[in-house]
Length: 306
Image (cartoon, rainbow, N blue to C red; front, side):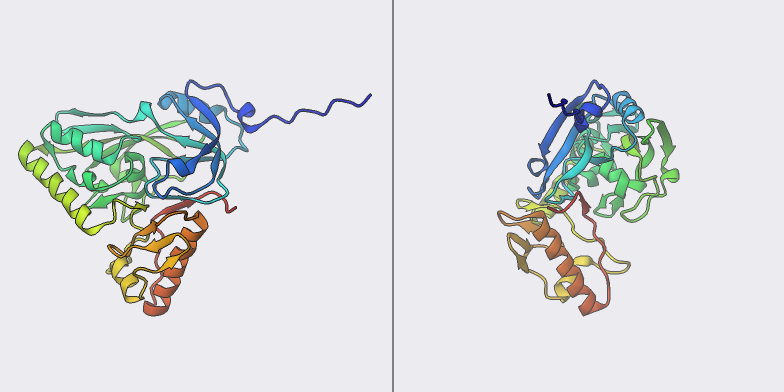
């Protein structure tokens, strides 16, 4: 009689018990703005900060984790993401105002934080209404627009490291600079506090409407895109370099360099992550050959090729 084959536990069976939710083979193409990418081996949506910290403290050391927000500035490769993908949900989306400060969970949409401040008659955060994504991403990359950056308004941030320790740090400790933070790569931001100042609700609302109108007029926000593809090199504008290299309207498979704003890549239908990344690399090559400048990706690329 043959001996029974030993059972090899699946990844989800090896993970600690949580109050949040696990799901296997979660379709990331459904949550990324590009609408492409393979599955997450396991998706974990923590209930709150303490649930996240306990998970990180107790998970097996060999299990990698990847954090995603709303997938706005993200390219997930076609083979998906091995290990655990952490997505901050309901327990991390609240934005509240107290005096001249605004506290927001890292899963809160930037635009919702701007709206909460506006409703409280606080000005200074209007620029967030023009940035797709969440506060966690804004902290990680010092997101900014319309002449203001996260570092200009940030008071402090809260994060959990991969061992489950909670860190509370002031803005200066994060070392924020253009599209960069000095925060350790293993930190997962969970909340932030911003400074604002009293203002006139009508004027604040008008400024937010102007920002939205500017985005509508200059960016392909109705298309399946991932926001700005490349960082602006010092003293240069990425879109101008891409224009000079003759890349406006360039295509590959189901991907096109936007005619409206050529620092945006668009999924015109049926694109793959490989086509998006391949066209981006082609643009980088052409810009380097035409101008001598090497563009750096602003969009975060994660996962494995198919």
